[in-house]
Amino acid sequence: MYLSLRQAYGQALVELGQNKSVVVLEADLGKSTMSSEFQSIYPDRYFQMGIAEQNMASVAAGMALTGRVAFINSFAVFTAGRAYDQIRSSICIPALNVNICGSSAGLSDYGDGKTHQSVEDIATMRVLPNMTVLSPVDAVETKLMVRAMMEKAGPCYLRINRNELPVYTSEKEKYYIGKMTLLREGSDVVVFATGVMVSKAMDAAGILEKEGVSIRVVNVSTIKPLDKTALRNFCVGMKGIVTAEEHSTIGGLGSAICEALSEDRVAVELVGINDEFGISAENYELILEHYGLTSGAIVENVRKVLRIVKH
Image: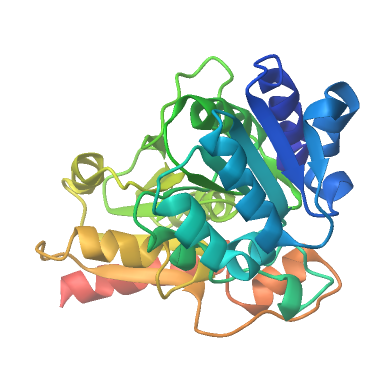
């Protein structure tokens, strides 16, 4: 089953709207980010700021100072990039209750090219003190995350894919920020994946199973704070690690895991975007293939890890 993360986000905002402290600010992309769902029910607490993400972040900070819980929305490349200074100075330094939705994240806005594709947003948000960074695997987890963001003090950055993705999260499953979820058990190599790359990791595990290689797949949907205890527990008994993300290999999930395991002697290979911007493409799968964000790339990196360990 494939569902839209954007629609799930809009529905979650509507549900949170029952709390009158919630306000939603948009940067002229409400029909794309789906924040317009909130506008249709609570128009008096929905603020259309125009194409002005910097101002939107500053206004949200002011609202948070009055006791409001603000959700600000735009494409990920604009929230994490264009409004960076305002997020840093006005939201993160005072640790205000402002939740930032970076929609159409990664390469998922495949048709609009490098100016609209965010391959560095995890890195720029992760480096900010007080910021929580979230990357849901599917629509169900998106809704659970948004509810958790509402309850958490301090700023959060939520990275949402533009396209429909397969569902792996149970609606009955208990969620908390920081949770890593085991999706497939294995005994040879553990693959830590986030976002769309979780489905690629699951496909890779099926391919490798036919070769007699057993892969453990873990969904890492909280990039920061990273649960180092859970991370190490998932590595126990493994011959090596592969990380997979729709983001630059610099500063993203792979970097976070390597930093966390810097004192451990373990083979790690990273699947991600290698220090370059995006391009335009005819469809999503085509652009993922161009950058090597595929099940095949994960398979090759698992094989590489096993070769390293063997020798």
